Image (cartoon, rainbow, N blue to C red):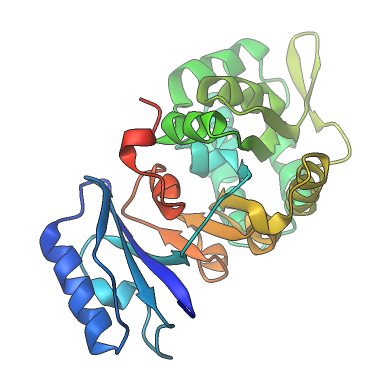
Length: 294
């Protein structure tokens, strides 16, 4: 049908039938004919409808303030690439802030990180400034930081491994550090990872990072490079991130997902996730829970 779309309702706590009914009624009131809801699992429901939301009516308004994410996805989606940011997206923390805690300078570093993720600071300059504050930190503290602080966000492993099993390419692209991205990629199952390289001397951080520094442009370039290498178009990719550093990648992908994101990214993304875990990205593609890797 012309203008075919799907309203995708997701929430880590579950999507109730009452919420689905309210969304169906809201679509009807907007003059948009909807099909029967398709329950993908306890946490996700898709509702196909014809047409486009009227100007001024957001998908979020269709659930009337309930703690559920409501997003519009294409009626049929087949994403050949899942590409994601690491810090505060696939994992719960900003690794550089946690390293700064070990170095006793977390307040100073976190303030810079927050401004950089909101897009208020140049990423490269902000990274150089923060890494300089870590000078002299022993490599043993990096190992302790990973073991104690770096955990996958809910749904991360299931998302990545399901995409792998479906034949997609999975890539972790971070403005953080290879010390962590390699470990996180292995834990989640990403096929590819890239990040910045911290420099060591005599087992301690030098306070500098290898050049070139990989930031916002590098993530966009990675999207294009991986697509080209695998015969894909950017429109066949789904990208996830949380900060301004992810903006170009999110805008270039076929589906750009803002996960618990800063305003600069949330406003530009196709999809916003605030109440869902990362398996919502599978629901956006219409993949039912019965096909998710356990």
